[in-house]
Amino acid sequence: MRNHQHPVAIDGHRPACIGRFPVGQASSFGSLPSAEVVLDDVCVTHRISALISAFGVLAGVMLVVACVREYRTGASVLWLVAGAAIFLSALYTLVRDVRRLRTGLPD
Image 1 (tube, one colour):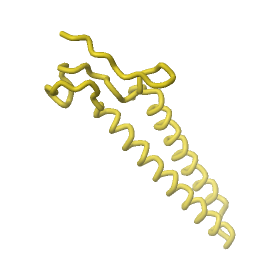
Image 2: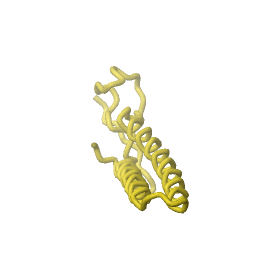
Image 3: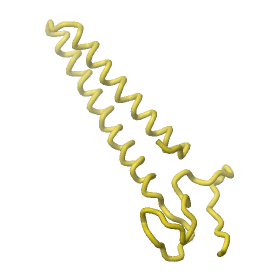
């Protein structure tokens, strides 16, 4: 069996989502033709998760804006607290997903 070299990024580290499975080794793709680089399906899942988290942050910002408007019209301060808590939760999730993408860590 040949020893396949994985691509190396400029900083000397292998990209997180490229080349996790050597050619010929079984993955969720099954038996692969001879290709040097394989995109891992877990990496695609992590990218989709980060995209969903980004939309969650966008929705959180819209919620905070709505909460501020409600508070200005005389609603309870609990609207602001709830909106801020939801926004911070969505932001934390986005940061966690982006870090996981950058470092290539599993769940």
